[in-house]
Length: 257
Image (cartoon, rainbow, N blue to C red; front, side):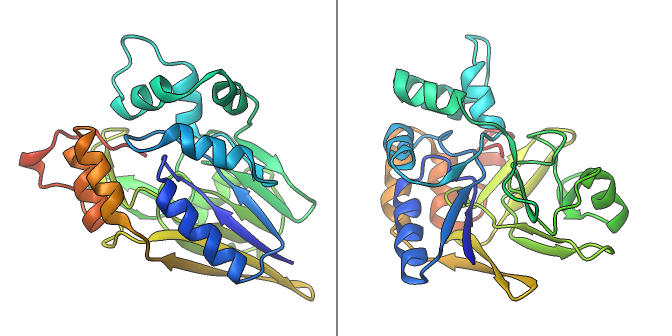
């Protein structure tokens, strides 16, 4: 059993298509998408339509929830752009998704943590940055989940952890947004340092589960050019380099997880 795990596509259709080509070449048996699929200044409707046509397991991320509850006073320009592009069919599709799913007795899927779609699981926030979460923090966030494999997204940070009890926890990283910053709970930044698309494969061999964290080059310049045309220099820079614009060049919190 080889399962491709994707998360945080953020409307980056070119990155998603590159990953589809890659995991088909690797002959995966199933695909799960952990959410935050559409928010961003790129191709949300086209990305939704491609995802809706796939026989995959899909979750909702915090941005699906935010798109559906967007008000005129909401300030996230990525959510606002995505909602403006989506039609009734796409909005109905994301409304049908949930943030967590016990896929089997062995595998549990969530966007953030089992408790909340916007909670960090394998990382914790310190002023200005993320750090790896401690075993104690991870254990609290697991709650009562006893699945042998737990996969999560949201932080855009590819990471694999084994708990003291032997559970395998995997974050595949972000398909389509290689850097972001956020003001909650305090300002912090995440930068992958490369424009590549990220995903993971989890695999059962006999009684054991293992994982591969995979990066795939794609035509990121085309997506950076699209962000520029859509007046998002912050996204143009992160798509091209995997780093945030210098603080003087972009307001904080404009490219959130």
